[in-house]
Length: 171
Image (cartoon, rainbow, N blue to C red):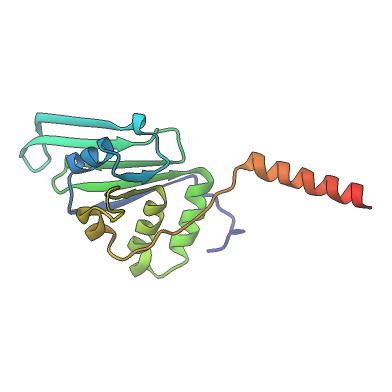
């Protein structure tokens, strides 16, 4: 896949099943600010239903959402269908760029690349030591951050105008 292919990805949901942590652990880490993220803490929603039935028949479900449904990135963790599922939703230009990044590689690397992009959005760290929380470190394994930067369209347009003015004045 190339950037000039004739398609545009507007949303992608990356999901990992059976992660080694719970929505409650994610909530607790966010509540004590053991995260590195630009996500606004006030966008976190935690839902706990002691009597709601899971798909496997067990009682009690929990879910967590961080980020707005309208933003370019959002995180979800839930256990409604049994083992905890972690979902990372991307939209707009970020969805398109991440899709190209992931799908341009062999399929066996897709999960690792997804984790790298997830780490661009959030990392769970002990701010006392600076180390990743153990359950997060186990999940992300040794995957580094992708370090993807999506430029703001307004800034790009302003930069183009400044370049144009520079060219006009310097001639």
